[in-house]
Length: 229
Image 1: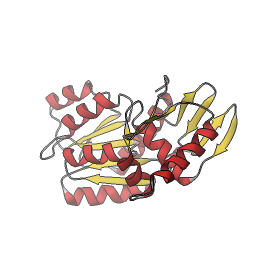
Image 2: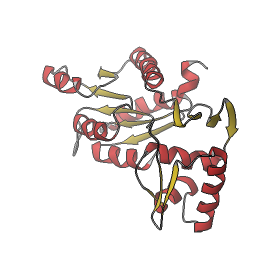
Image 3: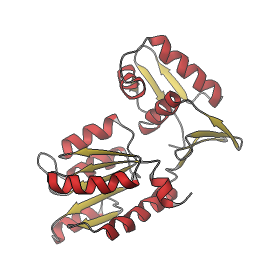
Image 4: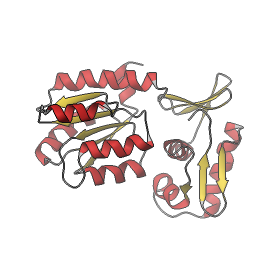
């Protein structure tokens, strides 16, 4: 699978307060990525990040309410490995020095050129591969591929339903954290469902995994536990 096909399986969160630039860059991102989430400031970006499966972030440095640097710092406390690109119209040395500690893929200067995006996308793929973010170990001899959307168990591929994929990726995005019933309803079923519907889905997924990594927290929700995450 080439780099661009890999990107077509991923989602990107793009935060930019200049609506003209936002529209222009969003159009390009939609060519490369499966899903593009757009935010107008850092607060919106954090809300989208917390409620969706995001694979890559591209944040403008200067934004109202919460800037790209502050947003990145908050996300880095939660996730050390997710690829993050910071964008700025300034070549301010202080901003560049501040950004070094954030483990960025790239610091892009405006105006963003098409060639710059191509180069940074290649770096994103390399980062995802190096950090095992395209395939993750769930348990001994059990892996999940974010590319094929299948479980690999003892080198055998196991097909998942659409809802099982959405549910598993939601748990993986919040590894070792409680995922509430409400969050599952909104992200997997797009609205309220009977509790048995969720239980049946979890039961079927557990059978496919043949593992105890999905933990039920009585009356609250579910979480996934893995020493590899």
